[in-house]
Image (cartoon, rainbow, N blue to C red):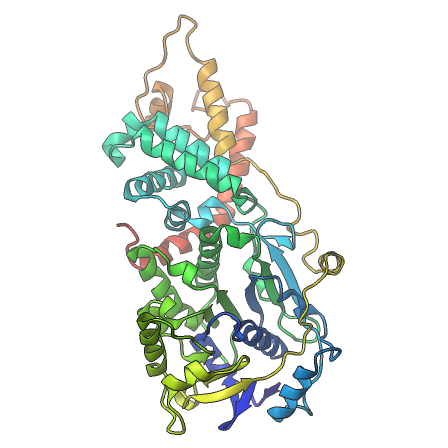
Length: 515
């Protein structure tokens, strides 16, 4: 239910509890032990944001959010009507489905989601591969050289080819980039193989996701709920966390400044949020903290969903203005300290002791505190969360297939594109170099990081580069296959130039990411 720019969350002794849309981009937290009702809370918030015309992104960890697209039913669910009656919501309560777009990094349960290696960037890629400082340095060299020579890193084979190249040219690159050991390159290649075996190859490539497709409304003005199938993805938690962080960073980079709009441009639910912060290096934590702080002015609300508020680092937790705390259990001294810390984060209510209430909350009940006038946190209230309107049961395979076939995104991302990029250009160069090898077995000694004397001479004259252009001569060279390869690559580079420059500036704005 939406009323006067506010979302109805539930009610309790303190009356109805609302989340004001104008403060929804001030971020939030949904926390609680397993089985206390976090997923239902996420569901009703997604429903309400959608009804208010706000697009939503959420990961469907267990598959039980997929029913958001279909209307619920009272059959066998008398508890829904009882809850609605109990909180004074019976007259407004009705069953309805919401517009949902289904996505899947592996392309099995939804439209494929892809990005390119270049767009992911070296920092997040190093995090994904769990590289040490030395190996991360090698990845940075690969990205720098690719940028210098306008070689597109689109998928894993492009990165493999680039790593092979810098290993072969390690001696020539040493004076500029320092030592590049074969052992480091080999370790990265093995990590890439492991990542590929986990199915990540489906994620890297083209067509890359257009963020505008995550920010749509339907013909009735309701925000589309974008659900990422994550039940299989959770088998690779590092990939899951890195993808969501990349998506959040892309939103920050691409969206314009809007200040505090009347309602968010997008609400982003980060379920199992602890995966983002587990074993994260300090540089990455600083990046997350700054992105969360700054993305608010882009109209994006980020809501972390986790079992315990202690899972979220303090600098991030301090930025979460809207809080819904389900029950926590205390069996150990550490858990009791966590409950005490969670209670102290709320504005006290003289009617009850917050620390005690956290352990007494029933399933579907929560402590709620949202931002009120002038962004001041409201007094915490014990609240019965309203019942959902959509279907609680997940989609069947047939229902999901029908939803995908009828989706506005059908056909746009389903087929991958493998255009010419670093792999093809470096392979062509290697083949041309092999063909030019003298028949007596000698070789042309390299005079630069890109190959032999010809390359160095052309570079000195300002002529062709390693990307395949013809050298200057007294007559016009014939148009060759390599010329068209370069043209295709350069067109892609020009199309992406503005975006890549912006990305570099943003990385600089968020502080040094080098260790």
